[in-house]
Image 1 (cartoon, one colour):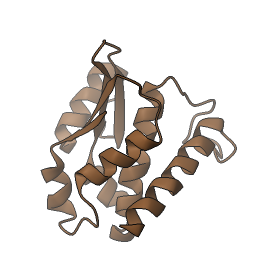
Image 2 (cartoon, one colour; image 1 turned 45 degrees about the vertical axis):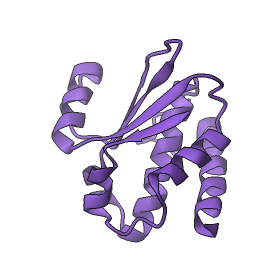
Image 3 (cartoon, rainbow, N blue to C red; image 1 turned 180 degrees about the vertical axis):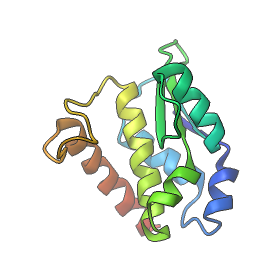
Length: 147
């Protein structure tokens, strides 16, 4: 099961979400293989994700998404997403798409998927994780738009 926390941060940036947080949860579950394990998706402010990034990756900067695999019986892991960072990089039209993409990206990492290349430095469109991610994102967005 996928649970989303602190969606209020998302609503402050984009008050007219075209779907409910339960909609995202349902579709992420549909296209994942979580089994009995849960995943928490947590929306956080810039300062919080910056602290996590510094503590766990040694990078003293704000980022869009971080995933932490806890791999306990009940909880596979947590995905932290910073809406403030995303809104600065994407138009409101692309904002929702990017939120969905980052949710999927984080869940894929928790399921053991990883990048073969550094995203910032090369064209990653032929990367297996990216291809899988975009297939899932497309399916989720089509379902969300239909509602």
